Length: 423
Image 1: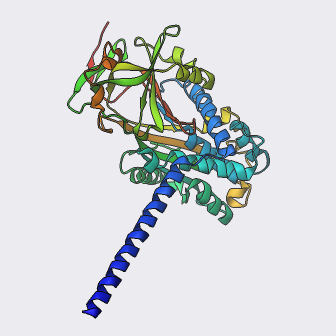
Image 2 (image 1 turned 60 degrees about the vertical axis):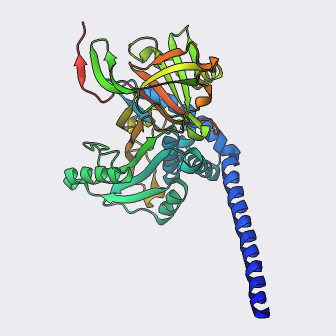
Image 3 (image 1 turned 45 degrees about the vertical axis):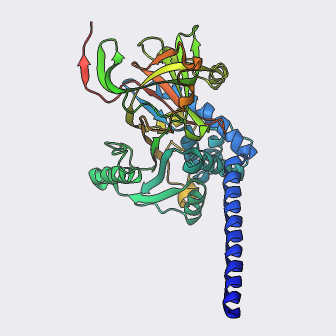
């Protein structure tokens, strides 16, 4: 009996000890999660976040000059990271031009790479932001070039880059291997980066991404129907359109004749912001307005408003070779075979940046958190404004915590069958 009591006492003691240990572990885990969520960006990461937003509009404005370019989708923070990779591989003015393009001339090299890495890690954290964002980066070199060990180590550490040689003697096979890698990296969401590679004698950077936002409040799954989307006044395609009425950030710019709608994403650390002209028109007029200053002005005028929203369900895949555009923004040496000094990549001054493929797939649908039904039947949803997105618009994913732009794009031609021609 005494032995039994001893065992019972020990068992009780062990149980209490285990419970205390579990509680301490849970507290530590909770504290770690809170610390991660509340972590403040360093000064240089904050600077680079702001500067990447400026880069976004400069790059976008440069890209829209291309004729026959319809849908656009770029991730400014990923582009900034690609530039960081160029700085890592470059020497002298080839490297310093990266800082100029990023408006970060006074930032030290270590702070540049650490800051860009910190920024991308923060905004792409799927746990704290509850979004699906797959990012895969790879740098290809001609088969005759060997990557320097120091570059491989540093580029993996800061920018999570893979490194691969490629032989373009069999171009068809080489292009297929690139596309197969991108498809595998994005779980099949991005089936193709390019159909061809014209310049095969230099280094090639490839970003392959898939992004799917989750709404803070979901759209009605049963309220999805087929509607017309006016690509132009004479061309309409059928798209699945989703609907819901809720409280959103909204502003009507009567001077510039456009509507601005901000829909928060899950965890409310970022939002999807739409800019849509009153009527179907070329987006050129609206695009000329796009600057960081104008964006701040519009965002400052958003007010919580009852809005009846109709949005097309979107599934878009867009790939851009931005090598030329980066050159026009000031990265003139790295993209020039006669001037580039990327000797940190291979140890030899025999390499230039021949291609920068920036490829993204994005989807949004009805998925999100449960709807807040407490406001139904109240005055809050009376007389809602109408945001009916049945014609081309510009959109961006704005990160609230870092003030950076995660994606910037335009939807001109969604997937869909042609419905009719109008005169």
